[in-house]
Image (cartoon, rainbow, N blue to C red):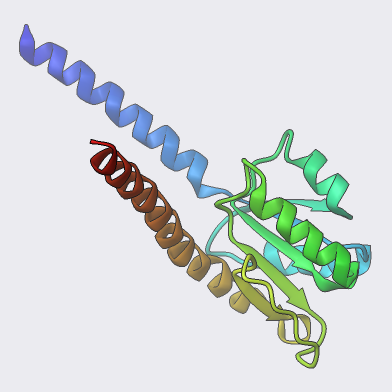
Length: 170
């Protein structure tokens, strides 16, 4: 009797894990920019990646990207720097503070390497002139490791801070 229940539990657990891995197989990428021609080139580069299937959505400004988040949960965000300096900073700031996207890696697609754009909320910078499907795939896969480390450190900091405050309160 106990063995049958354990087997049923194991089967249910296995099915849940399979469903989670099936959902995780497709990465969801939000591409933000104001030039539809350049954005379609980026989406074509994403579609050429054969290692991983992707679901992409395009937003043209901050408002449309926030509207996209109502129905779309991206695992990665690409932002074109053609949207303007102020709009770019505001978009990165809002997306990195949003509840759904605060842990999502953000990459800025730059036109040139001459402009200095310093923003600690963006994880990577890619030059559009050298953008290939393989480079984009490497950037996407390598972005999850630092973001996971940031999440772990944030969680550990909150936990230790709470423990320290309780210790000081006693």
